[in-house]
Image (cartoon, rainbow, N blue to C red; front, side, top):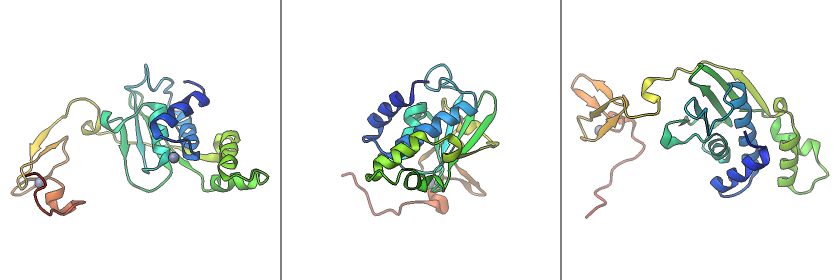
Length: 198
Ligand SMILES: [Zn+2]
Ligand SMILES: [Zn+2]
């Protein structure tokens, strides 16, 4: 892996700005990869790594930049728990580690560097110098990785009996009178207003 400095440049490019979240996310990604034995996530080990992130904030982009995982490659999974946490899975060895930023890490900057007036500088200094154990809790976990969640071509494709739209990778719900997409089954995040094309 490159040095943290080099990785942070990459984070800034992908994310659009440098922020404390990039530093925290980059450190989380480095720790996660190390703990599951993935040494070269963007090179030789790229097919071994899947990361579940639990929040859609700055940190998520840093994890993506450092490890190369992407939604479009199915190597990045998003579960919306609203937590500064991510689980790193080595699919070759079935090793998985979940890392969460400690609540105490939030006050580390103020406690340790009160003399630095600028909050951003305070956070950068603290997040650079803190030990992994001061920033994160890491636990070994089991993650059931379904074949339907793996990278590669879709494992199945069916058509929803109601809307006629195609559904990949087993995301349909089977009912007595057909298969349904999640939207038609009542789990839609949108409501329809009308046709948008002429
Ligand atoms: Zn940011
Ligand atoms: Zn449907």
